[in-house]
Structures are given as C-alpha cells and as structure tokens.
Image (cartoon, rainbow, N blue to C red; front, top):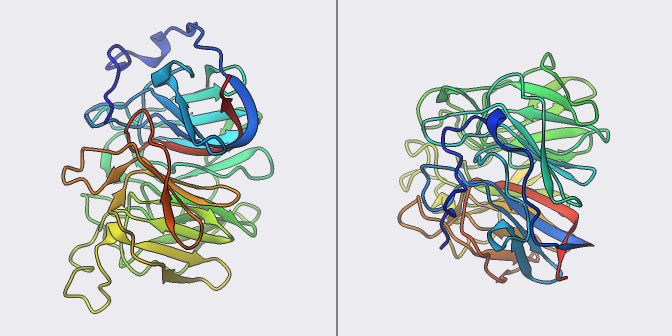
Length: 358
C-alpha cells in the first residue's frame, strides 16, 4: 500500500498560483507498444487527491511513474476527473481536490513525449465525478457528459458539452441527456457514444433508477436515446469496449431496496459481477462471477486482453485501495506485476506510446 509523498498535495493553493516551470525528471525513453495509465486519483487517505502519474508497460509487465521519479507529477492533484487522449497528450478535465472542494474547472494536459504538463482554458463550470475516459470523435471532439457540480452529489447533472481539442473551445448548447448520471463509462460504437452505469439520483447517495442506466448519444444527429438497462443497479465499477461488446466488472449496489437477496433476480453481490452489453442486440448477460470484490479501479482493453487494475479489491474498509492488476483473455483472469502505488478514482487511459527501460 502506498501513501501520498510529502509535499505533493496542493491543499487550498489556487491553480493559477502554481509554478509552471517544473524540474526535469529522470530521463525516460519512449517506445511504441501498449500502455495503461493511472493518473491522479486518491490513495488510501481518501480525504485528499494525489498528483501521482503511473503507467504500466504491457509488453514489459513493468510499471513506471512519478513515485519513482520517472514521470512528471500533475500540477494540480485531482480525483474523479474526466479524461481523454489526443495526439500524444493526456487531457484531464475538472475533478475535485478534497472532500470539502467538490468540483474544479481546470483543464490540465500532459505531453507524453516531453514529459511535461501544461494547461488549457478552464471549463465553463466546475464539474467532477466524470467519465474515466472519453472517446475522441471526428479526430478532434469529445462530449463531456455527466458528473456533479460544485455542490457535490446533491447536484448530479445531465449536461453534455462538446470540447474541441484542436481549438481549445467549448460548446454547451448541444443536447443534454434524458437522465443525470455521475461516473458514466463512455464508449463508442457504430456512430453512437454510450454512457453506461453510474449513479442517477439528484439528491443523496442512493440510485432511483431500476437497473444500470444506459444512455447513448449520436453526435451527428445531436440525439439521445435510452437503451436497455443492465440487470442490476451499479456504479463505481470499471468497464470498456472489448471485442465489440461493453464489459463491466465490480462496482457497488446503488439501490439495495430494489436489488437484494430477497429479489427474484438476485445473482450475488454486485462487486463480484462481470456484466456484458452487446451493442448490436441491445442485450446484457453475465460472465462467470469474479473471484474478487472490485470497485473504484480502472479497466481498459488492449489488443489481446481486458485489463482491470488498482482500485478497491476485497477491502472491508472502502477507503483502502490496492496495487494489483489483472488481465482477462475471454476465459480466465491472470494477475500481473503489482504497481508501486495503490490508488483509486483515477484516469484510465490506453496509449500506443509510453516509457520503456532506458
């Protein structure tokens, strides 16, 4: 288990007052390959966020990161932010720094090749509890949907904003979604952006939607649809598109009045379930039950595997998190080398360029 290094929490310091000339970190060579990133988030002390940057080299089964001084740390520590990847750069949108500071508006950008951070113009309003990765559309746009505002979970939103990565500009008059949704998991399939799972109720921590919310948006038509909900309510799990289907693992039960041991459709604890949504048939199914209880981690698909990493794994205290990573080949799960830091609620990014052993 890891802790935030002393001096790396920015507490109440304003973002615009931070120094933008950072010391050069250890020279790290880059290579083509497959890489899984875990940027920002929280460590075992959930009161604050972390500025740590971790990346896993799939080919080497090896971790690199700011904790080892391989990579530059974030200027502003955040968790529960929105993320994307475009032209060699990782983008971080909003998030929150601490329990007291519910949302921020900053946009931070990491250049992988330069190993340096920069900033873009602030978002139109503060938002957090966004998606862990937003697909890029038409080579330049993302649609930043969902999350909370500065008021926290009492103000979950259905907002949908278009961001132009090339021009660094926002358009907020695109169509909003039918339902509010915090921690949506965005994927893209056949012209549609899907925002799946998450919490929907505008007040309090319990969901009021009977199942797993599944909404989709067509950027070309500026049109929303609500598609088949998952078989049980869930949020804060991990998912991605893998082999043309959406795979979701773990999470926690957001509606215990509706999904419990007395329900006729009870199949077991939510955090041990592996759900699969087929985009073409608009249907869900269960894969084999997981051997672990998972939530608040990351999941990404690579060329051959579906990956699940860090977050909470079978912890009785849900403020504890893990340094473990697993891969699934469509049949069985296999554990890989542990990370140098444990954390959760981080950005989950897959790239084809990243650090390698110098």
